[in-house]
Image (cartoon, rainbow, N blue to C red; front, side, top):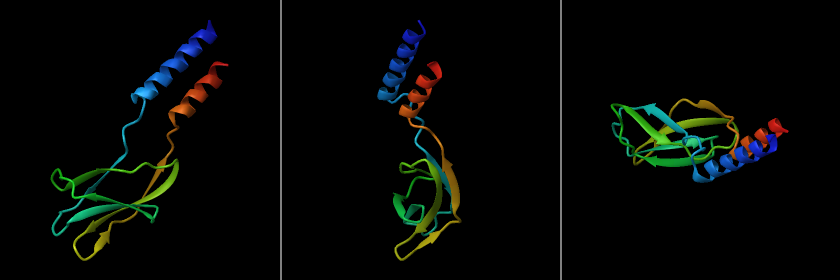
Length: 114
């Protein structure tokens, strides 16, 4: 009985994962800026991965953009405000991603039910 429940649970998790229902929401970053003279924003991850996020529509002076996929671990994020001639960086923000993948979650459940 226990094995049947386990297999059903694993099958459900795989199905939900496949359908994308178990995926956490995409990580996002928010920042405040008056937007004056800015033609685009960039997000710099770990000083090397630069993502141009364009000029999102702010809510008041708060901008929001999706982050590119992050690996598990500690990362440094910097938002840069750019115009035609240069970019100016914000202070660095340190974030930690510790979310296990759906496969790791299934493996953990299987170990728990053994």
